[in-house]
Length: 145
Length: 175
Image 1 (cartoon, each protein chain N blue to C red):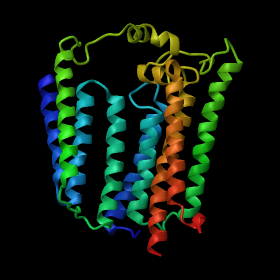
Image 2 (cartoon, helix red, strand yellow):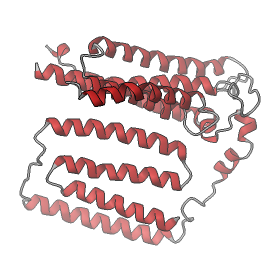
Image 3 (spheres, chains in turn purple, blue):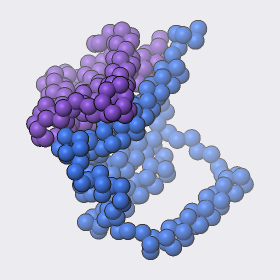
Image 4 (spheres, rainbow over the protein chains, first blue to last red):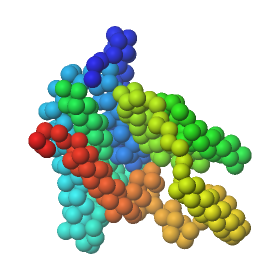
């Protein structure tokens, strides 16, 4: 896939970082404001897709990146599963038990384990959507060869 | 608000109909986008910003992927003449639609108004959710605390989708 014109490249350079930061904001404030792991993860993947579309597929050395995204995806879902299982081992032995201290409702660090679930689900969603997109791009490159 | 939602749903139906009948595939894909973005406005009007954020981003990304696919292909839909089998299929579809519409009209008299019905379960979720989960955003509280199993299932669906895509699209491994 070839890159686009210099106007698109410059605009992408200015915007992509902001989109990435907005995704992180949505994920971290998932237990306070609308949004959460799923929404923020898709926004994170969107910033990478913007970069790949604007700069072409040579920009990111794609084959290696795809291996990275699948690794992050599997590790993130594993961490979510371990967090859920930790509720089974501690406290009243319930799967998905929120055993950590709740803190003051409305503060950034509160709600026990929910922010951690949000963060790792966000990583998982971003990595899986990005790896689907990269798989399509790599497929096209290999077919045109 | 019901009027606004009705107008938007009407536009969505028009867009879907045009997407089916358009000869140019690019305009069909963009008309299909009307459905997604109309759904975003419906979610906002029904006070569901969480869903609206997810829907608008996912719709944009799928639209980009579909446009890229269409620009790579021939852009024109292959036209096939309907044969006798096609007429039987169309007649069956119309009959099933009529039956379903009849039952919808009959049962809609006993349904609650849109967005105003209250279940016993949802009532107990809403009351005291902040004390139980510690999360000010009720949707996150339900997603990761009350309904943790559902979220785990959703994440598993994503993993399975990625596995399927990577399995189908791998050319090097097949050789």
